[in-house]
Image (cartoon, one colour):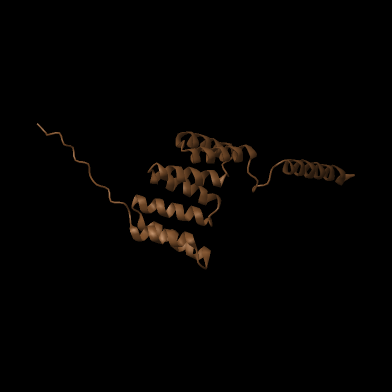
Length: 163
């Protein structure tokens, strides 16, 4: 009799916890709405509508922040627009979700070179080579970008005379 109330409380706890856990979706499953928005973003990128693609992809990430593919596509759009700083941040978000993503490491390395951070890009190259073990096209492409070096920015000269 003494233990029946404790056993009843324990049973209720087990029932409550098990039903709340069974109602959640697994961590690996991405929301279907986010995947649909990602597909729409891909088609907008293919059509050349980068503004619309950015809006749709940002919505996709807002619907499900675990959508790594949306972060990667957003980063590629940022690179297309010559925004390497934004691309670096977006690749970092993708790498937080999957640290061993070779495509994200390569993309971030290329954006780092475009920004002038060649040493950090070489760190990404080392990580890629560690992950690939054998011949890896991502490592070859990133090493070529590193060898080429950052773009040379020329200063704009104002042609109006100073009075």
